[in-house]
Image (cartoon, rainbow, N blue to C red; front, side, top):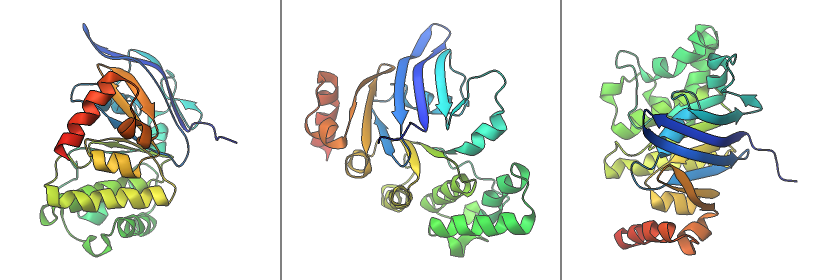
Length: 248
């Protein structure tokens, strides 16, 4: 039996005045899936992702997370955002807080845990991303890859139902990308549901369960990675994938 989607996007539109960025997105992500969203810059990928936790308000459509319509006027956004973790391109860490402080802050302020409990959960999250020994280090003492892994630890510490990644490796030097992608592979193996906007085509091809190709604010094609990268059905997908193959 196929499980019901834990994240469902229906008829999603987003416009900035006369600029229509999303033109009717329909997408379903099932529990435990790693879904990668690929496509050229400006295709609406990040905007779609930001609509999934109301960092952007959609112009029309529906986003349902774990049975909750997050577009509803009466929805509790603080509660919803605990179900939807977010990892950004830029790490967005507080420079004056240690790695432990950055990860434990939301556990204390949003979920109301005491310091000892919050720090215990934060240490476990840092351990999961391979940074247990860096708990007392400040962002300025960490590499970009380590800072991004702290960002991932901060997101998973809240035990979200879905984890959203917006180009998580785009701000990293090439030699630091692998450590972040490995953490994402480990999370997938542990059953985390993830929706990932990425330009890392090798990762999308090798690690994802489902690949979505977007262009011009619409989903042009979606399917298993072997279809999208090996036998795409749409000409626009073929052109995009062939450019990736030439660079690989």
